[in-house]
Image 1 (cartoon, rainbow, N blue to C red):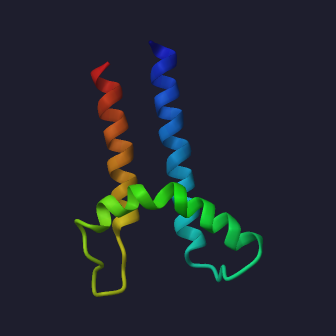
Image 2 (cartoon, one colour):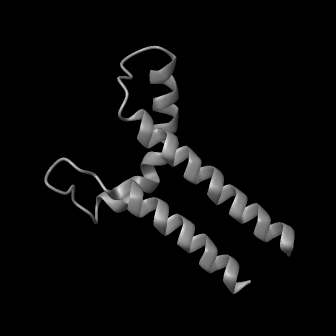
Length: 86
C-alpha cells in the first residue's frame, strides 16, 4: 500500500512540474522552433485540466490568470487528501 501512495504522490508531483513549466513557457515567445513544439505538446497535456478552472474563475482585471495557481493547489491538496484516506 505504501508503494501505491508513493506512486500517486510522485505522479501528482510530476504533473505539477509539467504544469509549472507550461505556465513559465507561456511567458516566452514560442512562435516556431523546438520551443513551440514543446509548448504545443505541454498544452495538450495541461490544457484539459486548466480549462476546468478557467470555466469557473475569470481572469483578474482582464489580464491576470490565476487558474494555474488554483489548479496546482487543488491538485496538491486533493492528492494529499486522497492519500490521507488510505
